[in-house]
Image 1 (cartoon, rainbow, N blue to C red):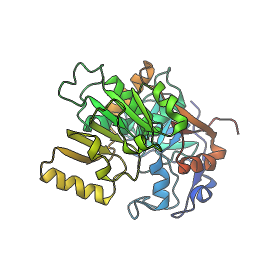
Image 2: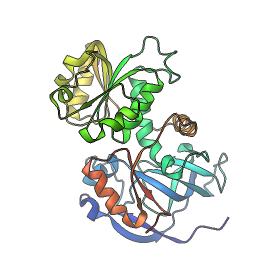
Image 3: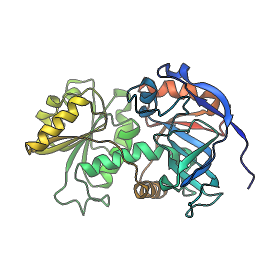
Length: 338
């Protein structure tokens, strides 16, 4: 295999703020893998809201660790070089990886931890693979936090949730959550915008609500069911809004928690409340990424790609993610048409 180039094209930002215009095209040295890392020649990367939230400074002073910073952690590509101590991968392997919080995905090459790099089956495209690590893993961990124990059709989920609500069901996390909930044998009610009602129903949702209608805003199931679990992928919903639609014992798993949500969750925990808010912070796991890749290979989990951009148009992809209306995933392809 040919050695990687000495320099590469990339997009980076050098301060907080700036949005899409803050991303600057640069030619920088190809990074070298350190111990436990691999160097990938990237084929695709997918943008998640956390990427531009870091740019906005929403987790300062923790991230990014230093400027300038090449963002995006979800990626797929080909292994071209191994750091010391890496024995389960080899040059030429097609892989899926997550490099968070160190990023590096908006570039032709990136280093990634071998511990979070998994084989990409031939049946799974680079764009599909790059879409999985953050969004699909988040949906999976939300359902597990809600009490789902298996995804084999429901036979092993006795005692777990039966009726589940998925909010923002047409988005990156939500569209995976609907599919995974159905694999678990759950009855799924979902909320989304009017233009995506058919799309979300096509993912398998049993009931779909336009969140701008009175029923959708209230999150009321048309069948009258109360929810044992809410996979909450939207923002700005206060806890009292959930109370009328929850079962006596229920959990709301929130991927966009604020300080108030964390405080409420703590209070509910210490008072042993039956209805609980659970803030979820994704902790990527190699075995879960392998499982998600296998479900994709089998056709049981589908990635819907809203739009694809070549690396040269990364700013457009970034802006589209910030707009917040993507149906499924936004992907940057390094070998795409310029």
